[in-house]
Every structure is written in C-alpha cells, then in structure tokens.
Length: 388
Image (cartoon, rainbow, N blue to C red; front, top):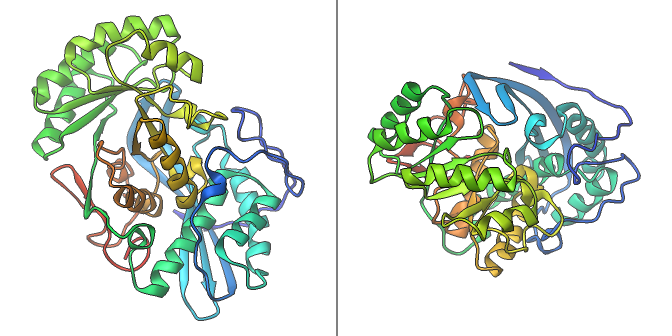
C-alpha cells in the first residue's frame, strides 16, 4: 500500500534512547562516532524536485522478538530529481519498537528536509546533509537523503554505488537466515529449509521463551556445518546473560548478538563467557562504536544516518580490532541495497542480516532479479545506483 504523505508539525521525539531526541529548527545534538569522516557525495546538478511517499509492508507472519511482535513495516521513500533529469531514491525506515523513533517523526523531518533540498544553492552532497541536519538531526531521516544522493551519483556516472565507495568490492555478500518461529518444531523446519537453500549461517531470536529447546532443535536440524548465532536484543541482565549463554553454548554458537544493553554490560559479559559477543542496539550509544566492548559490531544504515556514516563507523570499529557486519531492521529494497553496497565495499566476511525481504508479504517489490539470494549469498546489484 502506497499513499502520499504531507506532514508539517513541530515535534520532539520521545526519549526512548539517548540518540533520538530531536527538536526541529533548533537542534543541538552532538554528532555520534564517525559522522565527521563521511566520504564526499558527488551531486553536480541542483535538486529541482523532491517527492515523498509513505509505504506500509505487512509481514508474512509476525516476527517475535524480546521487545514484542512485529506485524508490519512502515517506511518513507524519498525521490530527488536533479536539473539534468537524474533521479536518486532513498528510504527512511525507523522501527519504533526497536529504535524508539516513531514513523511520524521521520515523516515530519523529511518534510522539513524537502524545503532545504529544493533550495540547494549548488551545495555538495555533504553540505546538503549538513543543512538537513541543522533542521532535524535524526539519523533515520538523514539516511534517506544520503541514500538518494549516492543513488543519484551512481546513476549519473553509470556505476553501482559500491564502485563509488571502493576500488574493489564483493560481487555477493554472505547473509544469514533469520529464524523467527517460537515453536521448536517450526523453528527446526525453517532452519532445515534455510540449510537446504544453501545458507551457511542461521540466527535465532532468543529472550522470548523456550530458548534452549528451540536453539537445540535448530542445531539438530541444520547439523554441524552451519554457523548458529543467537540474538537477544538486550533482553537479559549481565547475570542472566551469562547463565543463558552457558546453557545455549552446548549447541555450538558462532556469536551472541546484544545479550545485554550498554557498553559496560556488554564488556562484563564478554569477559565471563567463551562465546564471541556482538554489539547491535548498544552501538547507538555515544562512544560505543570505538569502545572495544564486543568482538563484533552490527551496523545499520538507518541507525548510522546513511551510507556515508556507516562507512565511517566501520572504520572506527575495525580500528579496535573488532569485526563488522551489517544488518537491516526489516528494511525495504532500497535500504537492503544500500546495506549490501556497503558490505560489498567493506568486503565484510561475517554473514550479514540482510536476507529479510522475504519476510515482507510483498517483498518490498524490488526490480526483477535485484537482490537475489543464492546459496546464502546476496548478489550486489551491478547496474547504476543502488538497485541498478
């Protein structure tokens, strides 16, 4: 379902997480780690038209997580058209239950950005982003602008975005299958189907009930040749996490994602368990990216504020010796495409959480053949821009 959106209201984002408080017109939020090191986004022609649409994607089946069930996925699609006719498209995809950012707030920010973008005065891509940030420093909304600028740059030069980010890139990115079922039998069946399809890594949501039973059933279903990771979405305390990881480790875990929330809490768990610990939601906290509190960090285009910021964050993470992988929060095709171009340019080795379009009832309607997955690898679009 697609509908036109026109939102205009002064709003303050509720403080669900420390990084999402925004006041429009007077924003005084400190830039998070890595924002000042973003690559330049080429945009040689002035933006003359800005279009904004809201979309709502129902899920094929509810996704159970420790923060509740997700039934549908809303997003905004931003289209920028330059004077030479080149267009660029981006996606703003907050997920309030996950990141504390209401969809309406993002829509309001994008409406304000539209005025800035349509009066760009010949500014460069980074200057446009800075101008938008002065209006509302909201990463999920800024991500749409950043994506659209990169998409336009790729279309203008006739190259895929990953080719603008690095001289060498992966043709396909390893991805994991996500097992959302809460029943042991259903989880095992889904995992077996993923293994049969060639996935070399599956992820199971935990912190939602019979974790040990489901994880053990998944391990039996996929055998020893498939990596198994679990994601608690910060559901546990430090002591609970240590006990849970000890119980789950008999199934052979690749890593445990966000067992607890907070930098010091993650570090405490990491020091007391033999399994690798990955940071996800905690990456939004000031200083978390470069804290070295985890063995791996899951980065997200929406949370980072776009492709440019994610690349800078990845450099910070790698400077600590930790690994990087990229995931979506049930993003649509543009969000997935942006993430896979980043992963390709970064040559990410850990499986990424980007095999999620199939969880949407309409799969977000990507172009035919785009974002295809074969044997657990997501093909990077080879045409101009984000989706080719």
